[in-house]
Amino acid sequence: MFAAGVSAALHVGKLPPAIAALREALGMSLVEAGFLLSLVQAAGMTAGIAFGVLADALGLRRSMLIGLALLAAASALGAWANGVTALLALRALEGFGFLMVVLPAPGLIRRLTAPERLNVMLGLWGTYMPLGAALGLLLGPLWIAAFGWRSWWLALGALSGLMALALARGVPAVPGAAAAKASGMAARVQRTLAARGPWLVAASFALYSSQWLAVIGFLPAIYAAAGVGAAATGVLTALAAAVNMGGNLGAGRLLQRGVPPPRLLRIGFIVMALAAAAAFSGVAGQGLPPALRYLAVLAFSGVGGMIPATLFALGMRVAPGEDSVSTTVGWMQQLSALGQFAGPPIVAWVAARAGGWHWTGLVTGLASLAGLALAWALARMLRVAVGAGPGAEALVVDPRRDGGSARGSGQDMA
Image (cartoon, rainbow, N blue to C red; front, top):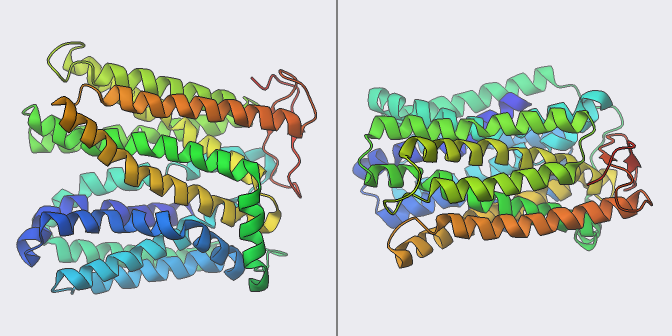
């Protein structure tokens, strides 16, 4: 399942290295290239919860198989596209396939993983996106330079097809995990959106993703403006994306050891705020040396990586029922995509107004401050769930619960 998620993420990350080649081959304008970049996120932003409900209705394993098949077919057809319109339509189809792969995965992991390893596996799952992005940034330029962008599309389509076969052979149908009835789809959406927990974790995801993509996404432009070579820029940006995996994996292990989720959220948002302030303090010509500012970028991405893994684990808990886990994850994906859609333009607008990137830390710091407020609200909600006062018990993510009750581990919530 993890390899399938990385395969899906590669379709998101395959485009940035191909922009120059696509513009030359198809006469694509910069605006059209921007639409190609955003179409995958637009699918998540507008239809995340709908595809989460669809995954619950189809069945988790079946949804992942259909999504991989869509990615394989759309990417293979895209390799033969001779116009921008066809490529845009196929890119939208890839966005739908991506959602059908990644939304049911946490729920399927929950069903197939022993309780004592669930948090570790969710932490591993949280690395699928940064790993896919890093691989795309590293391998894409080399492949396209050697074989062209069309073969890049074909190769990733073939990879997704192979992942579909591997998933069909290697992941068994889960006993008792029949697809939810389609007649209850509207009811699941209503129950999910009526619950407070899904809103808190989804909004937290939006605040995290908005600032992470704004900082990592603009690193190439910032380094190019500073005179850094293209090859070095690619490696530095890929490394900054890749270290995010360490935070995801670390959060999974810390959760397994009983560290309270709100504490991990607070640490992540605080470090992101401080690291962004340090990373951009010298962009205007003053502040930390470049090497220390890059280390701050690594801390921003690496420690910030604790946030998505923690939110995936919390999403399992706050879902209003067993049949609405993918629906809750879909809502998280939808608001995360909204954050990724809004964050970079806001940072770019502030940079344009300020005449440089030196106010970026302030913008991301405000997002982290809002994230800290949501972490406090989540901690308070979880205390109420276990019927205890402040400082009484910590949430343990229990994969075998029914309903929405939490159980304590005897550690401090805060």
